[in-house]
Image 1 (cartoon, one colour):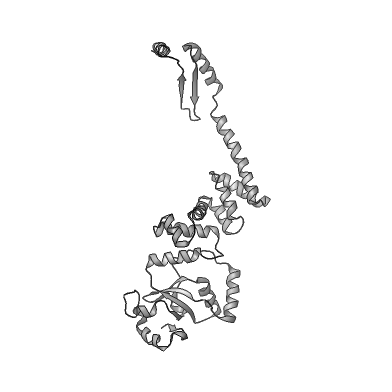
Image 2: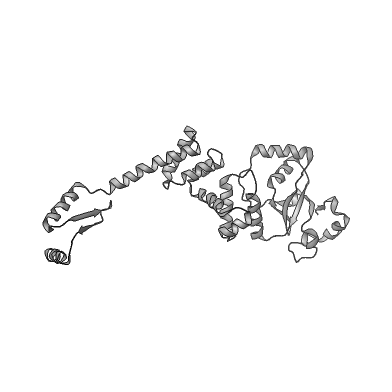
Length: 292
């Protein structure tokens, strides 16, 4: 049985005798349970299956363990009520640190939520964290769009961010996974990642990524580097569409034969077309008869 916070008084403790049966807003006693801070047995709390966060900084966790050892848990975690106990919505670092310290219970703010609501609360709470990396934020945005079926406009209102900012984060997910990992590990910044997105070729993305790390390039230097990569690509396209010499000779021969300007256009895969100019209907008729 969860113990109530002392500030709530003995009355609430009595009302919570049937607490395990409270799992929805319509259940008896729900209005007394939900929205209150309880001292919950750590063994009764399950981790969040929808936890959007995958990286937990070990040093930060160690610091939290030291703090809890001295001062206890200052900020309650948030949980939802389930049939056989509780499930974490937010506060997993505090929950883990409390387990390491050896506490038996932890202060928890109780919510009632279905799976979708829980996922949304976990994702939105996660996005608001100051120490979250850009890829984790982008993944949380994407999950809200995909799994909660929000539009970017609705998402903007839910998380309090403008649509441009959200779009910039989401575009990071187009990067090669190796580069995404580099952003998560702090090897490069989000600004570097946004610059690299201008390159569609994933192999070239990785080449630029490696050069950023090797040469310790700033975001501005990275943007200049990307421009040098893009210019040769444009020249290569121009060169690849140039007619081979045998086609140039054929173009002249056809032009001499029909007594009119002829242009041959050919793609790299061998497809193309022959264009014959004419200046009047009479000229067209002459060419038509010639080609019959």
